Amino acid sequence: MSGLPEARLGGIFAPDERWMGEALRLAREAAARGEVPVGAVVVRDGVVLARGHNQVEALRDATAHAEILAIGAAGSARVAGAETEDGSDGDGNAPGADAGSWRLDDATLYVTLEPCTMCCGAILLARVGRVVFGAADPRAGAVVSSARLLDGNPYRHRVEVVGGILAGPCGELLRGFFRDRRRDADAG
Ligand SMILES: [Zn+2]
Image 1 (cartoon, rainbow, N blue to C red):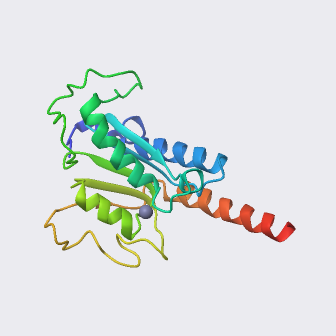
Image 2 (cartoon, rainbow, N blue to C red; image 1 turned 180 degrees about the vertical axis):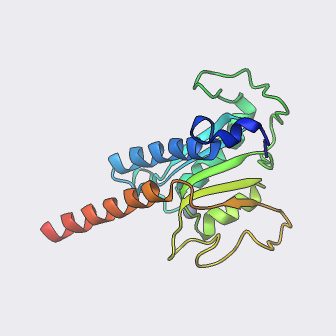
């Protein structure tokens, strides 16, 4: 990736933790709306292309996972002009920007939970270059847990995968959400 010396300074400049923190913020937003708390952000060269959080309930759409929404929005963002790191409007001309392309070979998808089967399909179709996930999902995770769909895929697309970034807070948010939901169900 960047190979920048700053990347080794830890707390000062640790991009993966930083962007996972942003995905975690989106996951908390999902929880506040009664959605299973999973958040995702697509980043390219320090620029946010798109953000998404799970919206299965709001959209009454079983496919409205954070990754699907973020990947879809990232394609549109490249047409419209990306948002800069500080959240202001960018000029859409980030170095090497490939406006109009749906391909995300040069982007990283940060997601708080290991992607499922469907989301792995979307990652491959969009040719996402790098996937960083937080907590593993032993039941439905299809990157390393229940399957390894990104390895040896039919598209011959190589995806760099990093797991376990901020896994503690990402997983705790999910466990807390389901704990509360069970409690509410028991009380009702
Ligand atoms: Zn999914």
